[in-house]
Length: 252
Image 1: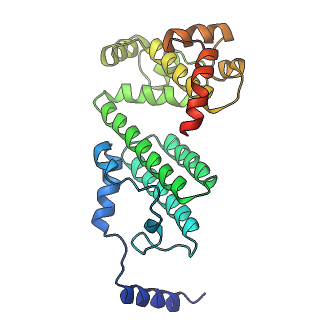
Image 2: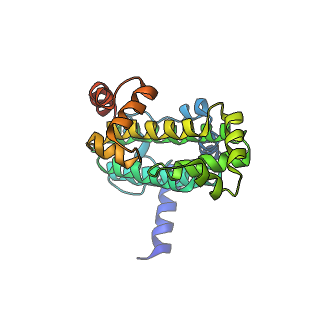
Image 3: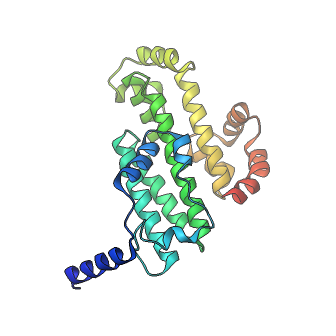
């Protein structure tokens, strides 16, 4: 591959066609809006789903002669940059990169530019919403932020207050008091709520049985899982999946 020759040819073509890549300050404004959790600003950068011209010009860069493939490449570039920037701004690393993988795998199944642009809009919104929640967490004490992060990383286990306190080198009673003061609920109630919310997503996005999901999130039995789920959500796991699975699949 003759890099210099190809580079000069492309630069000449772009000068002749009077086209150039998106200005850096505009790119920065977009990525900053996502990283700062500014949903209102992020929405201004939404792509128009049926606008093929977005990927036909040089403003976003022509990575492939095929327009659909060009859209795929740009989606991967965008999610990679957004993931890295969000991690640098405090988003939990494993969550961020796994979320990136999920969106790329979803994009890989898309068969049209409208699907990719719709997914792009969903992707930037999801990252921005997580960064918005991250901003709110920063008002908490460092011990609380670490406790929340620990819980998020161990949802598939049976988590006790003592285990969290030991992991953070804190007194168990102090951690419980601190958590309740800053969060307004007990540490035990928060753990249960996070497990149920995660299980609810699993009910909508997988075909795992209730007993499998119950075991996955460390409940002692399916009956305990169902009881806790109903207290948190207002429906049994079976009712929740029956009422919401179809509408969730359509929206995705």
